[in-house]
Length: 331
Image 1 (cartoon, rainbow, N blue to C red):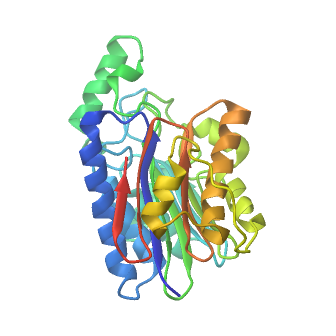
Image 2: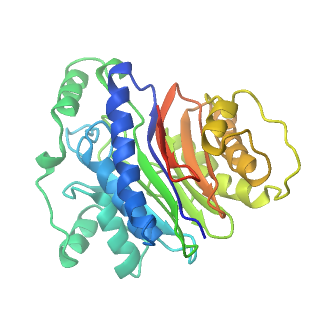
């Protein structure tokens, strides 16, 4: 089977001055993940490697550079899910983990549970050889300054790069047909201590089923939870027709020029499976907007590795590997 990889760095109103940093981070993440997949490596290793890069890039809201909570501290969430077994490993509200995706993988592989939170998750990290960092090590100066503005003045989006969005994610299919999806986030700025959004929740911020596909979401977490968006998108993939009959393709959907984006991937406007991966993403985001009046986005791979993405925000940072092995990134 031909491997496939898609990643995202969050759906939000990305300002012009952050576009280059977002594109660069996405490209580095693709390089890290694809260097594993292209050599026959595992999709689990690939999604972890890609997200490690994104967690270390301060332009994204995950790991270092995460938004600060009301107390001025970082609390991170992450999840990784195995499409074959339907098992996931997730952590939430961790304050001393530089790369939460590493800890989520440890939970997946070494814990009888599928989610650990806060101090219990950090104790598990120590027991499994994952170093704890000082909470201050996760705070970027840009986020510290944004939090200062909010604590001294009215909490406002103008103080932030991505006030409520910026989650990162990856979905990969390897040459052995193994499918994994993963998501990592620092959550929203000035959130109440202990708040957990959609990102680490199975079926909400992430889902993978080898019989259908894998999904990673980004956006307003409380709304994404309402429609269980990752599972919803997966079920849309499961229900998608698999024929190659011609399909009408809209000019634009969920903020994306679909024809242009799809032509960049396949060289022409496709139908059949390729088209339905895009349409599953579109329909899930459309449901988010219609039922909750909220914003967000998602990336996905269907069970054959066809990529799809959609968002209803002004921009989303994302990237994927084309069938020819080239990297495509966009904001």
